[in-house]
Image (cartoon, rainbow, N blue to C red; front, side, top):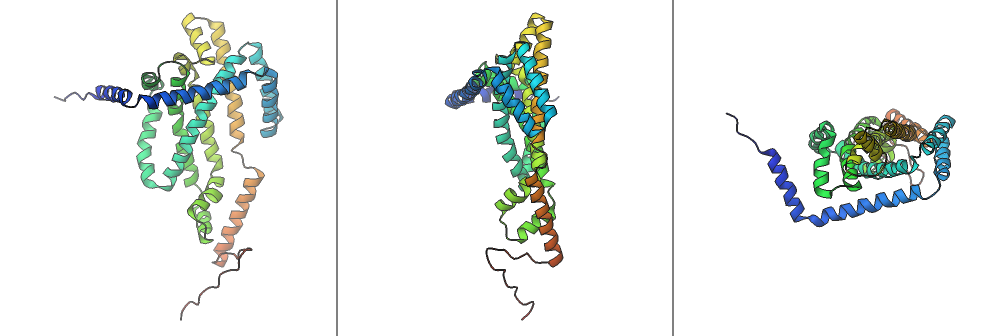
Length: 313
């Protein structure tokens, strides 16, 4: 009674049409991704492990404190003792490339969705479908377009990690106090200035939470990328599963967990209010309260205050 809808055949025809029409586009994307991952991998693997262990420990000490620095030191020393340092750096390179590209797409898209209701309405069902689609479904178009190797793994990771960046960026900007935005507009700030100087600083914790989730989702795709032939800890876990090697599987999974905890704690700390953001928030609150009590903007120092026109002539 119900006719069959050949949706799968339509998608297959679309993929064939794209491969026949714009093969140069996929070749260019593949070349750029390969160069980025290989370059970052060489930069992480070439120095001795002690160099990056010291850098990561010092960074954790400056950003979060001594406890994260101690964890970073012990975790990376354990990775070296497991003889998985090269694989861990390969995984870190893949995650960083995918997370940076996903954040570069997701954060601006979240800003557009927060500022334009039509964009939000159009993007929401797409994000819902992306977040509910099984992970392995992303592998099908990635393999068709880019073959096997590290590139389809990066592409699938980017697509999988974009939604939280969009959602949390939009949520953070929409949650900025409307009175603060109206006070900035009353001072004559243009929309771009309101976005840069008011909304983005106040929404920074939510935006950084979105970036943190982007990185975590990218790291969760490591094993999936290993199925496509990408090097790193994912390849170690996949090889252990196919060979029923429990020891290698435990060691590879433990290295993934150690790296995930380090990246999670490190990126989560960037969303904490710093002295600059606290000062900015206090300044915007004083400005909005002064504008609410006086009913007029405060005079600027670089130019004389405008003279108010009489109420009636």
